[in-house]
Image (cartoon, rainbow, N blue to C red; front, side, top):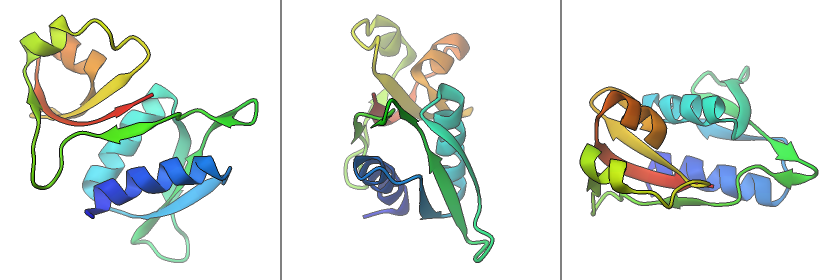
Length: 128
């Protein structure tokens, strides 16, 4: 499993057992994804691990005792990449409560940001 998938699994499993935070290897894609998740309100934040600067601590978020993230579904994998164009993204209407996260030429973006900037890209995962 790649490090990015590992981070998504750690976040989902951490919330399932009500952890306050999870520890994850620090990579540039992980940082970019965490910035998007923080901007969207799915996590409280993240910081560098004081004991080992190669790791980050991800602060999980809860509401009334339940995790904010109900599910994370990874779409693109190492063996199968899934791309979505701007036109296709604009036609998708049934993702009101679900958020698509894409890797674009402008960085990691949510579906709303990609629509505003009129770009498509690789569909990394769906979160809700």
